[in-house]
Length: 492
Ligand code: SF4
Image (spheres, rainbow, N blue to C red):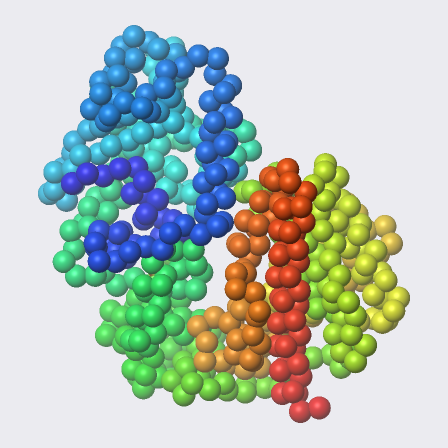
């Protein structure tokens, strides 16, 4: 069996999933092509690697050789003490789980130091920790092991040149952890029947097999579809032969579920307080109708500001950056859609913040102490971060913070919905809101923004920014649709 370093990527990205490894082996199952966000990451990654390569005045590039010749050239170059090898190639054999395996590795660089070599990979990620990028550590560990198998001694050092332009050391453990994962991958590839791996809203987002796994889970009414059922609980129930939502509601009540022990990290833990919500969500799904838990608690106002931010994670920008602060007043005195957008110059981030504060101030002046309605904690977290970053001299941001109204907890506490997720995109569909845009989503918007940043063509930039603004406007309309639906349930 041939194992290559990108097998770690299949196993770990975008989330750890054994099923993905198995499905990738099945010729009849096709993964969806990379989406726009993934493509942007790849493009930025290639550019980052190229920029790093250009810092070496001299190197030998082994990328163009066929694999057999590339291995020979790599060994030769090391014996000749060539200072910088770009795209070397290493290979070694090992028996894993009783199977003869050939392991291939293609580090980005091997750099001569003292009497050994440093193995270096270049990655766009700004943080290479175990939690966020276990696949990167595994790749480097495998290169280290391959180097040791080839040259009879360990590499001088393993390291990553990260997206922030810093070198991060990866400790070498003789390849033990990486080989254990490769052994698991070997086993998964050999399986005759598909392994059970529960679907999950966050877990499956961005996975190429989503269009394969979700319709099947829906058809089977898999227990993992119920909002609140985590991976450990779904696996535990599966092991106890409870696979469908109907089986679950028949076998469990709140007390039994609360005492149920499911896997939680490296230990087991009772489901506890979450049981009540899970039981109601499961019941709502079986009956395919919402269940009112309590009347939604909402402040009574004539008008409300819908508020939604679009931002880049620190992985894609030096700073975690909000590139669009979108707002619109809805109600009897509806206002215009307003957006503060980050300009493309050096001071664009600060200017957008100041523009947002000015727009928010104008809204307070026109409407008084109006609620700023949003979905989930992203807006709150980022407001606090920007107050720290640039200050809030007139107290407007603090006032927005005080007036925030997060509709997600209000919805969760008041209604059990026949949905797998309480994301805005799912709840808005449930309340009947229909988007006009065909392409949308947070990752789509990030990819578009990067396109706008990169283009030199001002006309194209304006067109792209206008698409992002349209998407944000629809997010605000969707939030308003959900608010109206919740208000109708208050009975006032
Ligand atoms: S869609 Fe979900 S369950 Fe299916 S392979 Fe991907 S991560 Fe695994």
